[in-house]
Length: 89
Image (cartoon, rainbow, N blue to C red; front, side, top):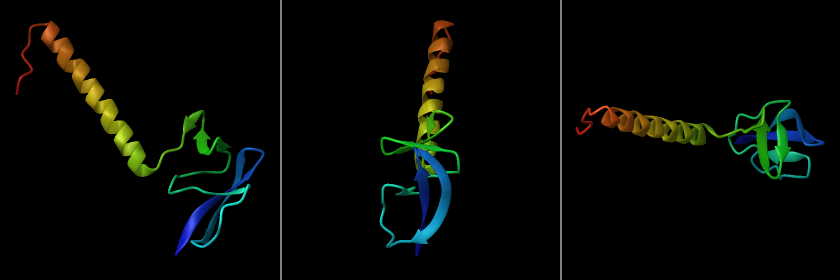
């Protein structure tokens, strides 16, 4: 099998390589752990960032979106209740 690894120089991803599963991380070769890392992303304190936001795995991104949707739904229900509309199902 193989895995994606980022070649990092001075905190910036300069290349993304397809490596053997047995390839070990080094100071400059970092396992992306299924994150869609791209050239130009930053690597700081053990995390990848793009435009100031952490690069998440697809699963982490889906969870984040579900949490945001749940908050929006709760806000909408609270607004409806303020207007006197029952939100009981």
